[in-house]
Length: 383
Image 1: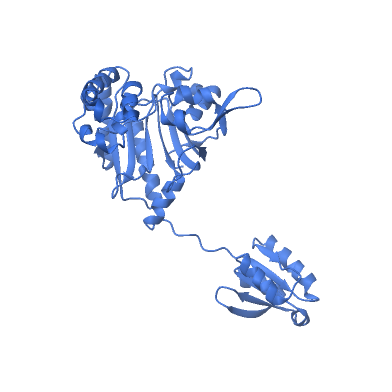
Image 2: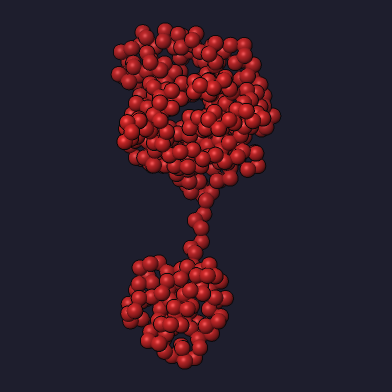
């Protein structure tokens, strides 16, 4: 890749404890969305619901923390979540993501955001908005959480049971509530950037300067948070400009505490992930992806003594890289109906007359056009 990231593969399933520790026990993903079960040995196993925790585990187990830092990695693989299927969301879905370890500088934050923006552009998805926020660090977070609880507690009756629970167990998530009743309260809720420590404030201000220098537009969004416990400092999302309430296309942020939670030394980390199905949907809607041209698929129809010649031609076409199927031993009309059923683009017809002439009939099934050509020229006609 142009940004210097190397591909990593991680297992389809991991020990469930990885996600409880890495993603956070009081999150929707762990509580409601994971496929978790005991294997025959009695170990509690989880199909991977996201990539970051597994990549961090691999970073530690395979000694990548001993390599020159930062280590830049990307992945592309299916994930699994038990959630209600909807447009662009499936229980098995593909995800592309990147992770950068070992550098706490805000320039890496800007690099990762630039990579995300560049990826969306490659798919023709440019009508998006970058939402940005800082949720501070371990030093600034307690004061901010106390301010949030102090603000929302007098309004408990307005909160749904889920939001009341979040207020106590995962306070930041209340800012991410989709409940319409709470929306008027969010506008005046305490802002995390007003509670940043000196280190967090310096990191935040330098990130904004880097993005300005790169010409990347952004919107500071004070209600943008993460449901994962390991995020610190920068969080960001790309959303459709026309409809903010649609699903997020791409989301990421910095997680300087995760490697330490997993048993390693304190290590800076930042990354993002995006659902491929959601991205394709957005790209198609914007005309960014054109369907690939229909590849040729050839049925070799044969009659009588033409079968041996047809069998040889079928093999020759396959070896030349053209998908070819030998027709069933039936009448010509039946073979052509079969060609339609398998969505063949062309039919090559070889019967007794064609064998006698040394020529085949090549029919374009889409255009209903055909021509007669020597057997040795069939490949060039189809190319």
